[in-house]
Amino acid sequence: MMYALWDIETNNLVAEYDNKRDALALVLYSTQHNGPHDADSLSLDIEEDLGRLTTIAHGADLAALAFNATSPDRRTG
Image (tube, rainbow, N blue to C red; front, side, top):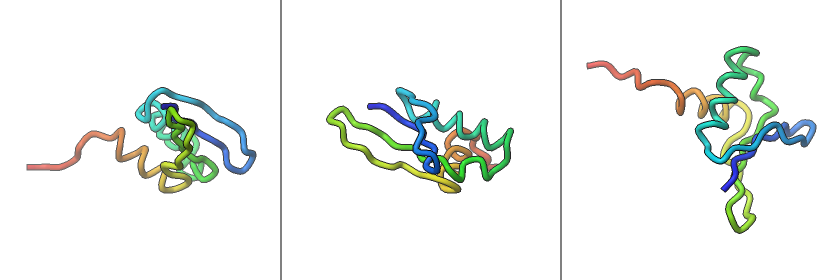
């Protein structure tokens, strides 16, 4: 499986990763340094071994997924 970050405005590949964690870490880094709207034109897709493509999330949903997946648990008590 391959996780691919795409710029959906330009249809350009931004990066490919072997795991979702690393792809989401790039999205989180990007939004923390460039602002939350930096993910607006990004899409995270997974290409399975048989070539099937599935979109995991894009835009604001992708930014939220990245934040939630890489942030420590904030529960108290």
